[in-house]
Image (cartoon, rainbow, N blue to C red; front, side, top):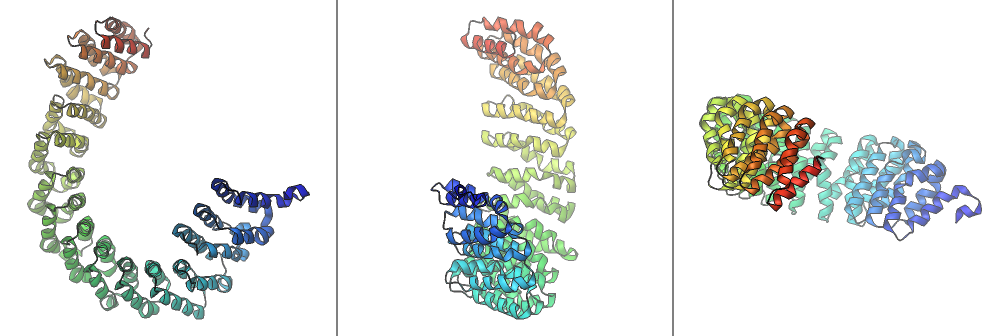
Length: 589
């Protein structure tokens, strides 16, 4: 080994070479991650003359090792001697930008973009720009795709002759034979347009945009839609109609659903970019078509944008546009055959109430909310209930309770237990939105009725629902409203309901605190230890074990211990077992 010759300074690189040639991938990966330490040990001079050439020449490795290397090199500027030597990092990154694995290439491009900022304008032209040219005219598509990501970072800082060359290279790549290269060019089109002078945007970028937007591959066309947003923001209003809109209209009616989906997904951004006039004349009909699209994915993407689109409409005729053009489409979507579409709509439809105001909401939107509240898909119902608060702000709690609450109550008493279960899960949410007085008046009886439901899953969910309500409304509310009703069930003739009392006490003891637990709940639990049904008795033992930590030591010793000792000598095996377990857990032996 090199260190044995007495030259310690070679030791780090020798170790690195050994580790990078090791068969174990993890070892190789670790040594790459320690590169900065090795570079520090070697010093800037030797990092430039020995380490970087070694890395450039000898690395043909697993993708994860190459990925780590590409990432490390992006942070190497100071380790090679600062910005004036940063060009030394280009050779290894150039070879990483041409490998087959996309993730590695992307990371190498990211690092190249990062270090391009540290080049002086002269170095950019002497070292960086030739690298971009080499990549752009490489034989393999991998290098050409990498080049697409580098044009925009060097363009602003080079001379006008080099700028012309860069534009020419970009044009060539936009019409490359390989779809992957055209895709990479399309994805960087908007970014490149932002650094170009306005005249060149019109003369160079627009023809490229038009060509890419009518490419034979839909994966290229949909990326052109994304670029459309950036391009539209750069152009003056008067040029949009002639330069951008024909292509956008064509994309909104593209034969491939993926392209239409992309238009729907970017709709709000497009709307802001093109301004109110074009929105009114062009985008409103296009949006209607997307909401009625034959593909569910497109309808769902458009439905997601309904609220945003309506918010961004020009105020002077916003209401008229929504009522005549958008609302009829929304009404159709409420009963769409696809649940993702209905769910997407339900997550935003409530937001329309703030835009349309009280009267329109009551007349037009409430019936739609009601339909969605009764939808068979739980996600649709949840999205409506989750957003009730914004309707509440517009039409007020009274109106809301008259219209929507009967529907909620109806669902709460539905014959299918899974529907009842879903409503219980929304109860804490509703309680938070409607407030305590309203809740007590309208919904409290429902919550108590669920505790004696004939399905165990409902009783169990109702118990945890009570806990969440107490967390929301506080212990005092629990003491006055919930606890007396729960404790009243202890004398119910049905033993299952008596057991529910115990489950509620287990759940509520912590939320209600020591005082209520000791004074009101504990006596009931202790009294139930004489129940005729063994299941109730062993649940008494389990409850005492659960609420024991909340009680003070005096109550534990004088009241709980005697009862547990009595249960420990019960005739039933299970009762004995749980009583003994409680005694040992509470350390009462």
